Image (cartoon, rainbow, N blue to C red):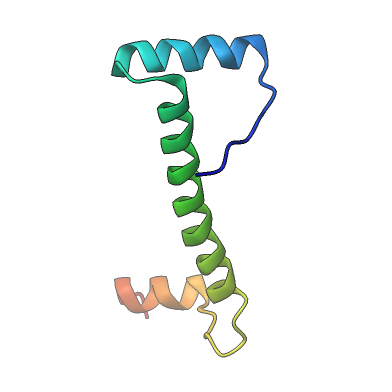
Length: 73
């Protein structure tokens, strides 16, 4: 397992300590879990952005969709 060092503001460290105390976990475990969650979200967001930039994906016109859904013709 690798070890990293990060500098955190006093405010962030205080919040981290409070979360660790509430969870009854060491700081390192809270940080590790937070990074895991962040990276999972990052992967999901990166995939969503790729899909949005896909030129083969059709772009829908909101007014047309609304008209079709509400049958306002």
